[in-house]
Length: 140
Image (cartoon, rainbow, N blue to C red; front, side, top):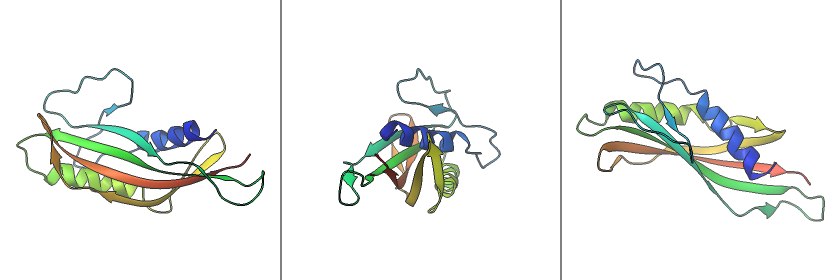
């Protein structure tokens, strides 16, 4: 349980995302899994920025509260404008809407807030980061 279950639940939610803009699928570059993006095509990656677990009560049986931000980045080729990438990022944010609950190994993860960051670029892509703030309680 714990961090692994949280990541599993959030990854599973991302894996059910249905793209907009007429695309049937967008490949996901999972961490530590070989991936080669297709030139000129969009893709996503994701990672978890977990916080320090805290005790959410008093005593040995109090739950452990996990907080963190799950980041999904959507990449589009450079020099194609921001419209499609922005709309895709908005749709990803809606897929992780506030109040959404996901579960893995009996651990419920609750989405508190989701927002799209500004457009950024690297050598080959324009991308948006969708930040998904979550919390979960682990019971000893």
